[in-house]
Image 1 (cartoon, rainbow, N blue to C red):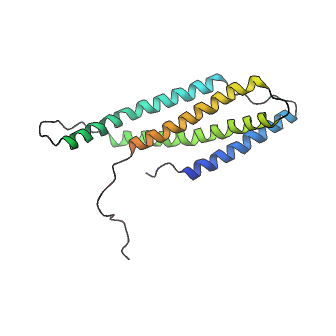
Image 2: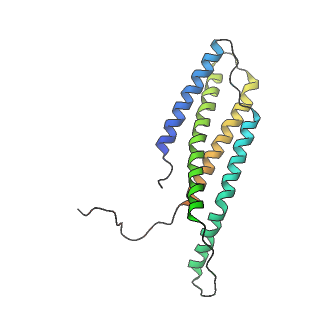
Image 3: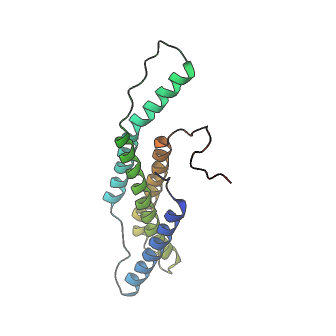
Length: 166
């Protein structure tokens, strides 16, 4: 599976930023309130981040135990029980989905906050919840990259078999 593509995350971020800014501009120009993210969104994102880290924990433990076994080179150490590869792939897919979702949330909240800070009148009660949601979305993105690095297979030191000979 390919790693998380930074360029696609930037594209999703830019699209969500434009939509968040445009929707905020439209809603304020038509007399509606600025969109506000509830505290439940921030709590949910934190819970998803913790669950994602918890799901990656068995993979991290296995890799750490395997590394200790290879470094020790002792016969009396017991080989750790391997993690189900389908489990690892599912955790990796969840991390990739979380990265895309967090890029969308970061863009949306960034657009709303950009509109708030560029408007002549700032609704201060809206800044706190949207800023909190932006920060926890960034945390989710960082967790997704950490989980991706945990799920990464060790690099193969041998020659590449799929390389075309010139």
